Image (cartoon, rainbow, N blue to C red; front, side, top):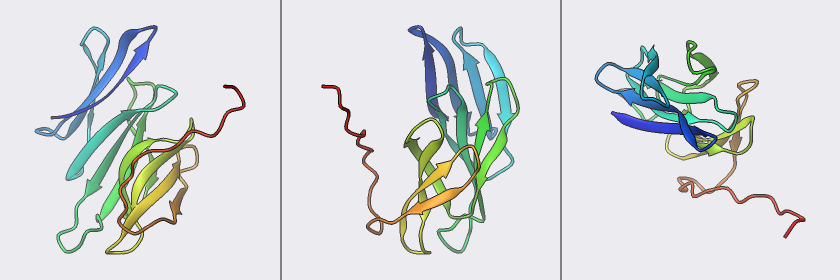
Length: 152
């Protein structure tokens, strides 16, 4: 089981998502712990359920390669609202695990820059565009500093 993310609404648990790895499903629960959606995923790997800043559920899936580090197929999925089927937001064999949202429409994810070096990419969840970010090869993602604010 891969415990995912949750969403609070007015201080109360609204939605919780996790991956049931025994059945390759993403399970979505409401605040009362009742299953409101079960999403079967027909790939070898499914993980990282994440609730975005606008309360949309995202998760990652991949078919793994036996010969190299690059998945044969990888995708980022969106489930919005949480009772609907999943839709593919972005698909690229070099796309790796999601990290966190940069803002309401952009997600930071790991990305294979070359077959032996990985970095980061910004995924536009509205268009599916993936923009690799130049950085030190094989660096570790730590976080994103917020833009400076004029308010103290």
